[in-house]
Every structure is written in structure tokens, then in C-alpha cells.
Image (cartoon, rainbow, N blue to C red):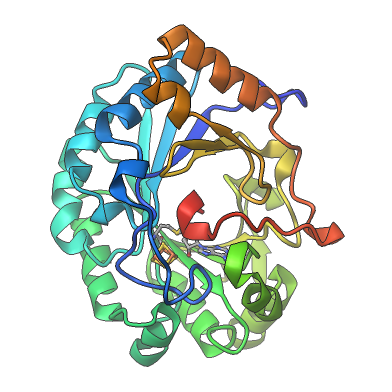
Length: 326
Ligand code: SAM
Ligand code: SF4
């Protein structure tokens, strides 16, 4: 098992499969984003070797993300190989859903269990504005395909002031009255080149709660307000689904953090909102043995920072969100 120096057991890995994306969400990356050459990204066999080594130090849950994980070549084969790896108990993915229409079935067959699908608004024009060119109907088709394939679904929306913080937020929340889904509203986090925009447009959980309650009535905490993963769950009266708030900025959940991240270019990112990383690519490509690699992983995890320092105006600037995986 892998512990950090604060006694947290770290057993959940989020893998950014690529920094590329078929959208350009305004809160995630600049429109003229340049991507890394493919040779600088982890190759399939390198990812699979690392997954195997992570299972040996006690990791059980793996989430594929990006950039957009569905644009990675051989995604289905990667999932198949991961699910055949002893110790891998759960494979999930965070996706914009655009390509799920054709990929949900093969991914479920390959062993994927859960998908978190990002949809920031139900309004076609606003969706286009927030993603710079996306079509919301593609995401809807993806959601239905994922349901049909038997994948567990959660929906994610990043809330941005003056874009989707009013009626769009309410329309998404209203969906839980009719659908048994969990819809999670995410406080926008500041990272990299887009941090000025992100800081200016950030909406906190209390503001979101107020807007939803004003339109749809009181929200009641679920599970006595205990976190479900990183989300605090609430429900509207008579609702079939749940509303979650991921409030990394206003209510950080560092004490219960059990995760670490693998960037597409092979760095162990110990905390999403801290720049500290451990280079895994160099030892991987220079012939380190499994034992040496596991020592590097355990040592890195030991030094995982406690949490972010946004309240002290320390903003991680070395990467944008799509390079780390969210
Ligand atoms: N492309 C996939 C997607 O959009 O779901 C996966 C990668 S994306 C970086 C992972 C998650 O991070 C998504 O739910 C996205 O909405 C969220 N995200 C992106 N930028 C963010 C920001 N600045 N603050 C908070 N969440 C953000
Ligand atoms: Fe792409 Fe996801 Fe970032 Fe949007 S949030 S630009 S879909 S990686």
C-alpha cells in the first residue's frame, strides 16, 4: 500500500491519456492551444506497465481522462488490457461525450464501468460558446449510448459566471427531478495560461445553491453531508437524481484525498493544484526495473503535498487543466 507523510492511503490513479481534445472549453484551454508531439506522450505499453506497477503498490481504481480520452488511438484495447490486469477493480473515464455514441458499447465490453460526462449547459448556442465549437446534441447522443451500454453515468458541469451560472445551472439541476442521474457542479479552478479568466469567472458552491434553491426549492444534504468521492451530494424534494457540488476552491477535500495523477507526458502529478511532479518518463525510457520504478512511485507519493494554496494566491501555472486531466 502507498501512504503519504500525512497518513493518507493513496490508491486511486487518474491517467491523462492525451493532452489533445476535440473541443476547446473556455475554462480549460486557450483557443490556440498547442499540443505535445506524440513521441513525448506515454505509449500504450508504458501506460500498461505503470498500471501494473500501481496495482502492486495497492492502487485499485483507475480513471482515464485527458484532454479527451476518446481521441486517443487504441483506447478500447488499452481498457481491455487494463481490465485484464490483476488488482484493477474499477475503470472509469471522464469524457466530453462527443464520441461516446459509437464508443460506449465497445468500452463497456472492454471492461469500463463508469463514465463522467461533461455537459455545462443544455442550450445549444451556449454550449457552442463554452466549448468554442461543440454540439450539445452529440453529447446527448453519447449520454444515451452510455446508458444503453449499461455504463454508470454521472454528469459534470463547470460553472462559469455570466455563461451558465443562472438558467443553465437551474435547467441542469431540474433534470434530477426526472432522471436518476447525479449531476455535479464544479467550482472553476485556476490553472496555467487561463487563470485570469478562471479567477474572474469563478462561482462558489454557496452561490450555486442559492440560485438553484431560488428556482427549484430547498436542497437537502444526502448522507448527512458526507462526501461521495469529491462531491457533496444534495437533493431536491421528490427528485430521482442527486445534485453534487465539487467545491475544491471553497471547501477543499484534501483530508480525504486518496488520488494522484499521471500526466500524458509521463509525470506523476501529486496534487491537481500544485506544481510538484515526479518524472516517470525518463526512468521508464532508460531501462529502470520494476522494483526501481515502484520505489520512485512510493517515494513520490510520500511527498504528496497536503493541498492547494489558492487562499494564499499560489496558482499552479506550469500546466493547463487538459494536460493534467482534471
Ligand atoms: N475532456 C474530458 C472532459 O471534458 O470531461 C476530460 C478532461 S477534463 C480536463 C476533466 C474535467 O475537468 C471535466 O469535467 C472538465 O469540465 C473539468 N475542468 C476543466 N477545466 C476546469 C477548471 N478550470 N476548473 C474545474 N474543472 C475543470
Ligand atoms: Fe477538452 Fe475536456 Fe478541456 Fe473541454 S474540459 S477542452 S472537453 S479536455
